[in-house]
Image (tube, rainbow over all chains, first blue to last red; front, side, top):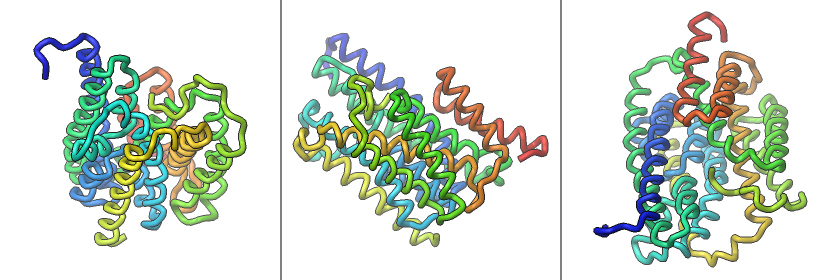
Length: 235
Length: 106
């Protein structure tokens, strides 16, 4: 864009690209798990292109794979997407975009682009970090989803490849950086208990929503966590 | 789910995701900046993801079972504690479950 970039901008672009590569590769597992869950290759691709939020995508195919209802799948996916709304409110004033670019910025507002953007001090670096990360993740995530979906189609029995276990590991990797605060750990323990108690009693998808409801109650009634622990922000 | 229902699920969830993202860009920042909203959102995200870990690891329909997925999750946790990249964590978990099943367990 510019012949002489400030070093802050170069650093933000580098950071964005390295995160895009790491996150994009992860898309291979999403693509494979999508078709294993019973989605077609085009349906799996539609999630990466249109829904474009890793946690929500894994959640939707998880509920579908478990035999949950469409309503449970949409509800779980959408609840996980609520944090993107908070991210949007944080990055919008930093990006200062109008018109169609605002729509593009909204679609690219995810954990990774927000984390890189708010991690910069220079305003130009904030914008460079957001767009590099958002576009980089979008392109690589979709390419890798396609690769994974085509590979998943050719694999045969997913259990023989351990792909069912890969789904649990994927969710664990997503939640890991969010477990630093004491309150988050307590809610995690509560979620384990609620889920284990409800799996034998309720249809697929309901235990996950019940765990979310329990967390909302905790969030509303518990005293505030000590500030500065980085809750609510991507790692 | 039939292919049509599955498509509807995919598209409705995608529309909801975009509406949330766009709403964040359009509402005044202070509406969402309250401590309670931020905290509840962070905790809901944790609860959903942890619950999904449990369901994916020990649920088999409506039964709770211990099979090759549980040691695979333990391996994933160790890899995460050692700061392994996401993709390595997932591959190690799959390899653990696949290996145990090849040996005839789980």
